[in-house]
Image 1 (cartoon, rainbow, N blue to C red):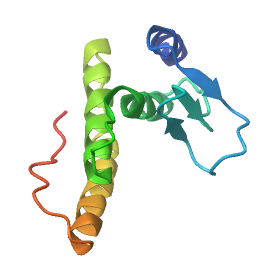
Image 2 (image 1 turned 60 degrees about the vertical axis):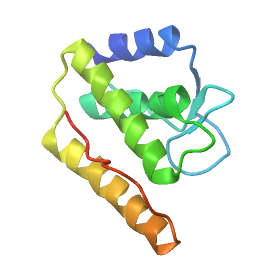
Image 3 (image 1 turned 180 degrees about the horizontal axis):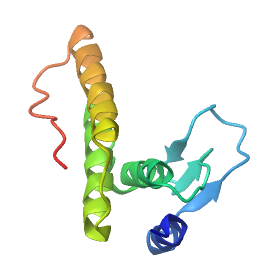
Length: 124
């Protein structure tokens, strides 16, 4: 499968600016207002594609009122939906890793007094 072709298509379709040499943060992340993804390394792989789609998912779905767990959930679901549109199989370990992260953010939010998170379980 030509993942790079798919990545470039989605970058163009959603008007995403890729910034490889940014000085902010250390990991891949998105700047919502600027429609920019920083620190993402393009490679012809499912993992690289999912990371990109997840970050674009933040740009496409994040609202100011969302809590961190909700933002992670909706960004991940956006990525899953795009993978399904392209007929790309998502490795179980990828779904499990993102679900663990979402669960961790829910637990963190609850420790800080949050409630009513609802069902934030990923579906592939």
